[in-house]
Image 1 (cartoon, rainbow over the protein chains, first blue to last red):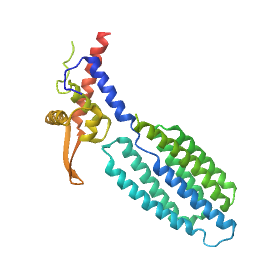
Image 2: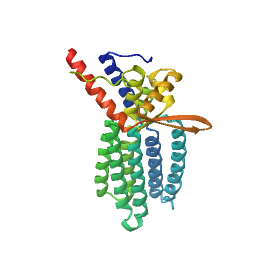
Image 3: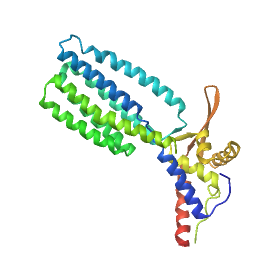
Image 4: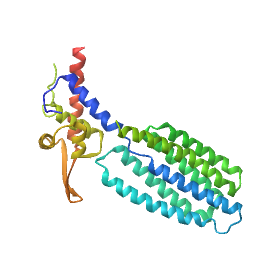
Length: 195
Length: 96
């Protein structure tokens, strides 16, 4: 691109092209959605299996997989942060969203002894739904919004079953709101990288 | 009677840089280079002109021992860009 004077229509073309270039870059590659989706599904299903097979202390799987997930996410975030050449408003909004989601998750888990497991599982699915609904809106990505609605539906249905079966419903909620939209988001992100 | 287009913005590369910066929070020099396809030397000159007009802020720091230039549009730059687009639309509408 040279530094020459312009016709009015040429100016408008440049403005449109540059704004579209900046806007079309997806701020999220879907990795953390996929990673956390599978991580929590693995924990929920292992916990479910231990309860069904009467193996004691199956709940410790959460204490192992969740902090491990936190460490992997932090390392991934640090590496990604180094690669980033541009800070977008979308990226900033997503940062605030997932920050608030993280605080909500920690508070829900800390208060678990007071409210009991059943209410906690319900709240977790509501939080997944809220986070992916807003994320889908910010990224204008419909699969996330549809997934979030399914997570809300799972939260509602979980009121009609026992604590053990709630683990299966949490897995379904995460599959719908994290894993499937995450994979779709990742393939969209990768296709943009090749344009 | 048309207002005159801002001469600072009415050039291909400076307009491209401002259009990119108006869409993001802040951008590294290399991002501007990749998106505009212009040479590093040319971009350096043009961002300096935009800075002199107070349309952008330039922050220089180091990342992994390499110099890093970060550009960010100022409120004055946003206002100038909005005025430029408004006048541009008048020009285009009259030509139709």
